[in-house]
Image 1 (spheres, rainbow, N blue to C red):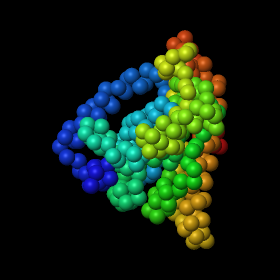
Image 2 (cartoon, rainbow, N blue to C red; image 1 turned 60 degrees about the vertical axis):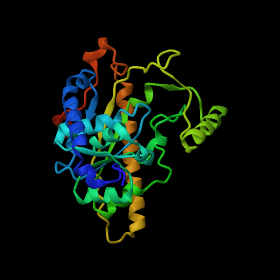
Image 3 (cartoon, rainbow, N blue to C red; image 1 turned 90 degrees about the horizontal axis):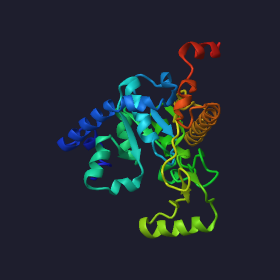
Image 4 (cartoon, helix red, strand yellow; image 1 turned 180 degrees about the horizontal axis):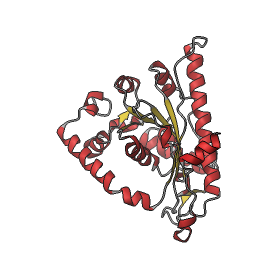
Length: 295
């Protein structure tokens, strides 16, 4: 079985993957000062269950930096390794790229491997929109493209696994999309995607970075971990109705997180990483401010 579908191989990897994992951990520790130098806005770490038994549900952005920042901050906060669920297309990878994903604990988001992770009380990260949520056409920034997917909610309910919604703002602004869905470019891009990858739903918009180039625009990142959503099924609900309810609550919570972070960013003079505004950068509320707001 492929390593990204083989749960035992992830939990007890071969020596070469263990060596890569040690190197990845060392790099993560070494880059901490560099990450902090950009002053990412990180809020809600106190919402993370300290036992590590929870499912993180996030939004994908064009930068995909969330796939690195979320595990980085969870590991720093509670010392738990996060197990990301990769899109099924990554399950066909071979060679060093496969080993690197395995070293990061990644598994293809198939039901049985996820069940095994939940039986072992692992910290898991999923992006229900999958790879199709990464490319954003004009006007789609910070929108969720789950398209009815509810597998994460079904597995969480099955195992009474708390869900922690986690949203990131900033990653959809490193490039500016100049094409909208429904146009000639989308149809052309879909045809190319179908021909080369067999996936017509992976159309890529026309984008610009700094000026007319593809150099990424500097953007501060804003990350928030929401309050855990309990998934234990009440007796009055059928399983199907409760799964739909959990999915809806998770989506609503994540959408609210994104809206709140967009408001935070709008009043932040440091949002473009302007060094002259470093001291005026908006900071997350501390514990005393949160307690005062709650009372």
